[in-house]
Length: 60
Image 1 (cartoon, helix red, strand yellow):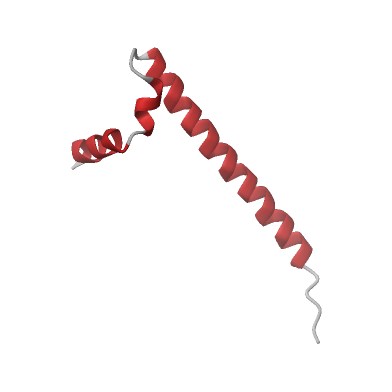
Image 2: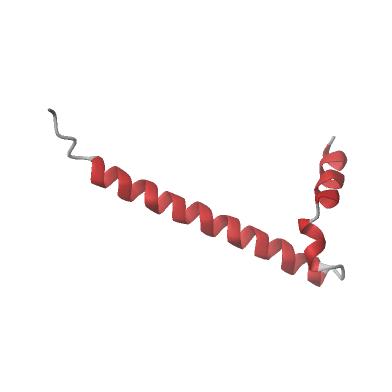
């Protein structure tokens, strides 16, 4: 059996990448909520599916 000496290092790197992606997602959602509140609308409206459908239709 061959030992994999880089396995722990890879697990550590993937764990750090996962935490960074999770933090990016959290800050993205918080930014959308704060931006919507400062814009004068309901902050939770950015989480509704209708809002996303409207944005995707606008991009087409």
